[in-house]
Image (cartoon, rainbow over the protein chains, first blue to last red):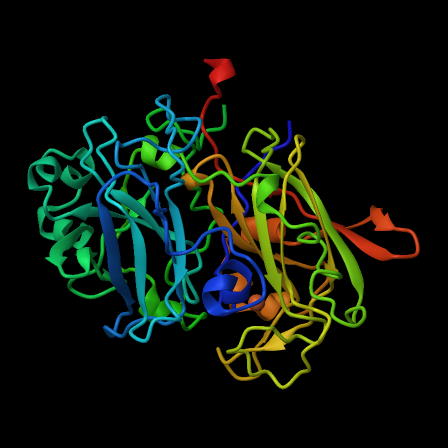
Length: 197
Length: 239
Ligand SMILES: [Fe+2]
């Protein structure tokens, strides 16, 4: 019997923008996803998730690509593997390069996800790609105003206590609405927790 | 059952014997960008086993034909090729409805990307980006132009081998893959720190195979490239 082994990952390289995030970067092609996840009819609390990706010298990385995947406000995923089946129009997937914002931030406009109901706190999962990263990385975003749920979350519990903060976005309620901020540190004393998912 | 599968997770694990390490100093950009601490194991839950689903409705008519989707006043310059193959899981089962996005340099080794300053000509009739979705047998097919090699600043006289970038979504977020397809017999492969960063036993899987069967008489050379993604450990049918 043939052995089907995983195709190796390779870096996304410096030139993904016109292929994967064409609309964001102004190239004449459509994109499957962008930074706006929530439409006018999406139920839930509107939030903006803002952050940067920082290299080993603390410099913002201008050519990273960030993808997020999340449940809707009721904790349902728009996918057949979720037996509750989201019936909203919310897809829950976003994709941004860090090259168009003057501060090299990603800004996702979405809704705060609900708890999925498996004991995990509300969270957004995030994949990181960039030049200089040969294999993509998984991390998560939790929410600072969910302290009780975070304390009971089994995934956070598996992370050493001194590193859990790297996964928690800080909530700010301002004139612009609800903003959650999180920076992703590739290295250094605040190195973000990445998962072998 | 293949040994890499762990019944504790519900999803096949990332096979680190197949994927490049996070820091590979010969590829200089990895030194400040790859994490230094060990990855934390995460059992797959609903978050990881689900993922976005993009079907044929996500596609425009010429998305899979790069010889036409960037044409303005003629045909692109270069050698027309066909890239085709199947997207499979680790048991060899077809992955239907998998979205594949590709991007590449033109025949002269120049990308449309604004940051590409390589002194080689742009082709007014070639954009270099495309998409397709696999059929019920997991099969996909792109028409394109063979990309040229291009220099890069990693080390003195560094050239990337001819390659096409691919991005895939499979059945869930854990199936996600971004990779590069290379061509058989390319002398630059043995000099490329990105290709060589891949574990030796797995490198061959990144090289497309010339196929006279996939070649179209009088039109374009064909290359076969199968892609294997991670997948769920069992399907609902198998209980
Ligand atoms: Fe490239």
